[in-house]
Amino acid sequence: MDIQRETLDVDILVVGAGPAGLAFGLHLAELVKKSGGVVAMPEVVIIEKGSYPGAHSLSGAVLDPRALKKLIPDYLDRDMPYEKKAGRDSLYYLTENSRVKFPFMPKPFNNDGNYIISLNKFTGWLAEMVEAAEINIFPGTGGIELLIEDNRVVGVRTVDMGLDKDGNPKDNFEPGSILKAKVTVLTEGVRGSLTREACTKLNLDEGKMPQQYLTGVKEIWEIRPGRLQDGEIMHTFGWPLPSEDYGGGFVYDMGGNMAAVGYAVGLNSSNPTNDPHFRFQQFKTHALVKKIFEGGKMLHYGAKTIPEGGYYSMPRLYHDGLLLAGDSAGFLNAQRLKGVHLAMESGMMAAETVFEALKKDDFSAATLKTMQDIFEQSEAAQELYQVRNFHAGFEDGLYAGMIQAGLQMITKGRGLVDRRVVEPDYEHMKKLNEYITDRGVNAVKHDMKFDNEYLFDKLTDVYHSGTKHEEEQPSHLVIADFDICNNQCTEEYGNPCQYFCPAQVYEMVEDEQNPGKKKLQLTPSNCIHCKTCDIADPYQIITWVVPEGGGGPNFTNC
Ligand code: SF4
Image (cartoon, rainbow, N blue to C red; front, side, top):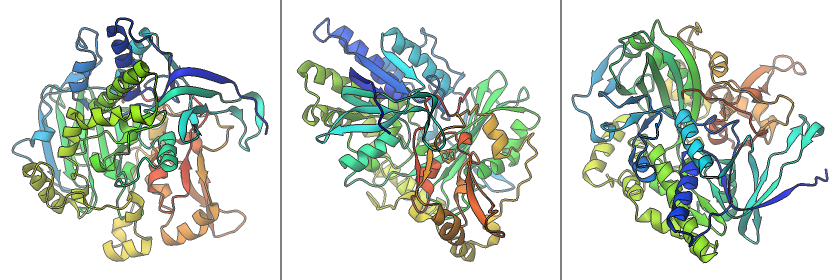
């Protein structure tokens, strides 16, 4: 199909209106203002695939205000939205029928001075300030292709709108645009598809450890009065995960009888039926959690992946015409399970880099390398370096990991082994028979009864995420070979996608053409854009691409 596309030239293009992209915009506007006319305000455009800034933003979230203090020192006077100031912290080790409370709070879990926030409200607040600084945000606009000319990034092509399932134009067809920029800043969030393209085509992750991920699943509840203390923050590890799997749970008071409950599970599990949503619902059955939420009402749902690999998994942050920041570039402290402050700081580093590039009118890698230099000298780098081996320390399971974590604390992050070699998450998955032989058939039982009042099935949860996609469009989950799914994967792994997806996008259904056989059926309109499938598929034949702009979840209070 020969498509005529509009080309727009801007100075700076940002992909993703999350905390990193918005901090970039605000900080750049401030630097230009302070320059007193030495540098003119460039034309900055931020594109966002969600229907509004914050629609796809989801996190725990307990915010460390360190970056906020630098970016917006009077943030409280500017009505920064937060649910509660952090109050009592507690940490529990759970078994199925009991709990052990830590007698003291390890320093990384101490939240004194932090804020319990809803990331999607917080993002909306930042976006208002960015727009007030006369920076354009275009929601409902996804970037689908990174434009590279002579090994230099020159911009992004946006998604076509109005194609049918077979890719043919409908009456409302609108071709995507070519957005050309002197520098493109990728702040797409976890496993950004353009970032992935950049890493592959431009070797940004050469010599780096593979990124490692968790999938976090979360609900927001209205609870009965008095179930939580003011600003209470609870973290758990142990049950329902077996000790060889990585992850844990949380409960946060959000004030006004609202509370967040969530569970995050490592995608490096050897279990081919690893199901973060199922683990989350199991977690809610523990007496510690049940006594808080029973009798309440679930209001909202969401899920996202979390980049936990840390310092050694971060790609190079620059290339000719390109900068990376935020979750896309792995700015997350695995030990504290916090990334919002680091995402914002990385956005600010990108702004300082672009400010220098504007002064020189030079957007080559030689100038944009400033980003890497600023990062290496920063508080953020110090923080990430201190915990550089945290996630890898749990490669041999929970108990070995706890010993490693303790050793890392007294050896400035080194522990027993520095830069332990880890495989990509999907390579940890065992074949189903092998796993059952090792762990027994009970280890793969998913025998929960969802009453949809306290324990929710995936479809009911998805309904509470506000997810909407145009049904008549090409699938944004591109499967390279359905034959592998319907034959080899069924035999070898038992189709793990039907378990790891927290939105029931993947189902094995009766194949009418082949009685007695099952085949994979996709429902892309359920997708909540968590990216788990793109990461965890053992054959790496699932590629998540950006759907029509505006499609996806509409997270509320998440
Ligand atoms: Fe997440 Fe993939 Fe399921 Fe979408 S289809 S919700 S990205 S696992």
